[in-house]
Length: 441
Image 1 (cartoon, rainbow, N blue to C red):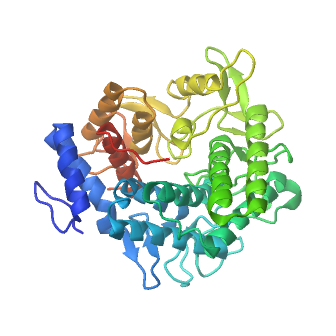
Image 2 (image 1 turned 60 degrees about the horizontal axis):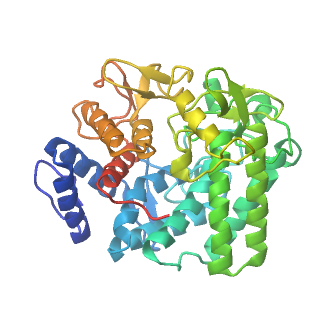
Image 3 (image 1 turned 30 degrees about the vertical axis):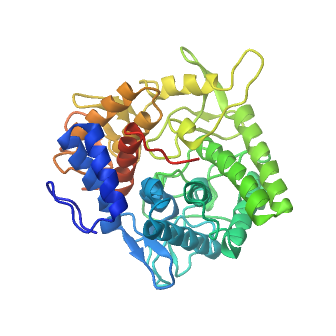
């Protein structure tokens, strides 16, 4: 499939052609539509490879490796087509099989090679293997494959992917999540990278900053940015774990007919949820009770948000709902948190001449991300706000008609990454939602 240039489309499946035609009519903006067309078709053209064994390998774009997280996010918008296009559905199903094969190899790894070739980002001090590109343990890397498997089922009706590979992988995920509830006592995971910035390695001989064990939440070494956590309980990733464990409960009951897996998933879900609601909330003057980004269980909080998903901004997108208490609705803390992270109280919220939004310590100061802007639109309540965000995205592409990682809030021609497949997908999903197309949940 080729990237689209001008008004010509080449070698696109009929389902995509029909969708593009409808989106064009609904947007009524040729520049915005051209950008959507480029972003929506670019991932299939540049990052997806069908393997001889029927699986699908998806590189991030400018790095020749497959991240468990990114690959799901890159293909997620195609769920909208998968219910009526068997070829696209086969591609997505192939990714699910590949991901759970990877989890079977090593559930602590975040990125994998196309073959057992020994390629890697760095020669890190951790339990590497020939299939592993990078072994930064991130809770979200295990959440996304579960989420995608569930959403694929709900959008296509297919269940063949819930096979033995999936079941074994799901049990491994539970084992890791439960072990990392007691990281200090039970975990053998270590990660050390030499001659790097402090955000690229873990302290205490690779164990990470000290956390209090047994508080319900599960530990994460790294954020979805691949930066090291300041405190080991990453609240947005734990929120995501709660949601996908609920998905696994349903899969275990209705598809796998595995009562033990269902009960184990439900129990762990409630433990993590209780940990979030007990240890993940603090009070901030002017905002009231808010969720922290990270905590250690001893009373230390990191109050911020990062552009990468899962984030606090993405709570409703992921499907997390807070606990209702007497005099406090379940969504009150979430609303307070959103107000905080979209203000200068968040150290990574920037305002400039061209845009305002959330960036990341992963990129330069005063750079905001197209991913976070798209997420702000996807979690907005009104069509008017979604359209405003789309206009900002359109005007900050740096003349490339594709999304970047981060860009300077004062000058969008200064950016990181010429194009970024994950950001292209997030922009595409926002356009599709604005036009009335939704991923079924």
